[in-house]
Length: 268
Image (tube, rainbow, N blue to C red; front, side, top):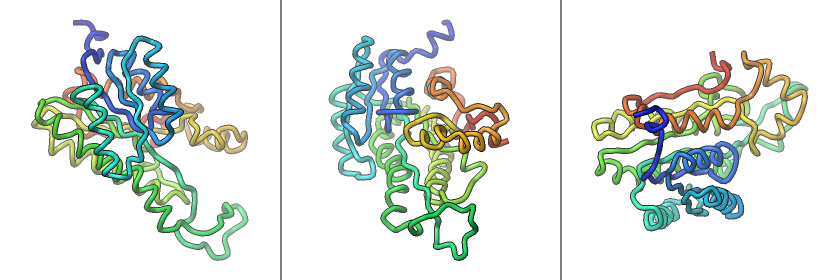
């Protein structure tokens, strides 16, 4: 059997959260191209409907489900819809996220080069970031994992950030959430390995997405970013989609519990 054949996802059903744009969209399209039936999840119906239409226009099968994954009841309903449409799910990519740039507490006499915030992070903001990244991952895996264990087959890929390896200021909620998902990746991988289910994470570096566009469109900010990256470039979305495709493939069946940095060497 050729490597191309081993990477195929024919007959499989995959869920991609945050699938309406950026990294999630690239992964959803790659999975569909490899033959998977794909459930595209996000809060924005317009974006996920567009991805569904793109997949179907290419001859694939997809379902778009608008859902706030921080709400466990809505996740349960969404999962029921997905399995009704696509059948048993054996692949989950937890990619949904949001980024908040704020100080953890008020910063007295902050130097001039510090950003100007309207205040420190609020309880609601902290809950929102943790709810999307961590709680949403937990709620979806609680729905999908039992079927994988029963089938003795499954793949989970969690999209985290290389910020958990290098860290920076004013993103405490984001770093905390991503760090927690990385820890969950390792712990859960050990727990379910006996059943043929793998759980890995991609610690993504800089990619051009809607969430990062403002930074990369600013010449000074983009230059500062590239100075930290040994390759002196940001990643291509096809590169992260290809890594995700490998991690859910048959050849990756002996890899689990890994947090893989894809960041041009920034975290070295």
